[in-house]
Image (cartoon, rainbow, N blue to C red; front, side, top):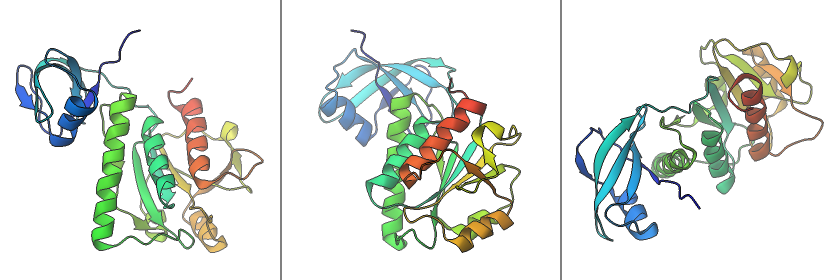
Length: 245
């Protein structure tokens, strides 16, 4: 069985030949979880594009040092840029949506406060949640092979996000849709996709989205949960316009 080389995020500049101590979370993962010894090979990336092959020159439960050997100009970014506006859902549902959005190649995600989202995030609690979401994104990038970190914006009120100026093709998932996935025109400047929270969007919010230029799209006859709906339509969009075959 061929073992997959561990991929580790490093937040600072990387240069061939450097010997660097891994940051605390990464060092703990390498030294305590994976239990890699000196001489083991890892891949490092800093989110700026490309990755670096490296070799551990010291590894124990307290610290891990790696020597950078070679830069590899590798990108698995989708040619389809998707900005997901996701109504905030409770607990691990939102975390799963963020994780899978990374795996499916989403470029940017903006969590949205809407009439029925039922989640209150302010002040210190919001700061902690943003840090938690960022860690989920980094972990998902390590797993799926992306060398560019998906952008996550601070949560916005829905009406503010809808009103932002953009050349993206705007889509809102809705049963009364004008388009199905197969009848969508080719997006020239990426897609801005709106997905409501667990309680769905209110009629007023749907009308507001329509007034702001969002076209409604249909993906099938069944009503999907928020954590299923976004991932399903993203997969379909990536199959039609992106890099899923």
